[in-house]
Length: 198
Image (cartoon, rainbow, N blue to C red; front, side):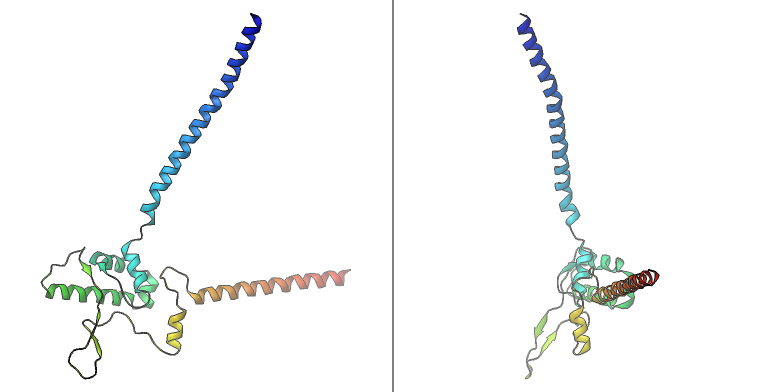
């Protein structure tokens, strides 16, 4: 009987060690599942880009090519970075596009609200003339692409308003190169000083 009792106690001891580790494993699995669920649900909300930012990125080439709601234009004007507002025509271009679209909609008898869509002007073929030129219903928004140095500068511009400008990257690389050259000069000076001291 003592052998049976010993075996029963040993079996009970191994179960006592297995149950806490099983509980710990289940708790860790629940916490991991909760974290995965929280992260997967937070991603779509954080990934949505506000329409005003899309509008600014669209304007970055000097024209607004896509359709946006009126409130997107108003929000873009409110969120316009200070340097873009000061050194570019973004504010004027966006405001001009908004005002011309509102005027066209009012002339057509439509009520303009914050969710009214602003369609960019389309270029229509000219009617009746000999030349067959193209005219637009509304003056195009933004500057016209230039030739010569201005055209080359436009091609070197990054395609997004939130990206780093190429001249800044070039200047940063040049600064790093100058610091490296100065550091190499110090190293050479110390090596020469050690040779003369020996």
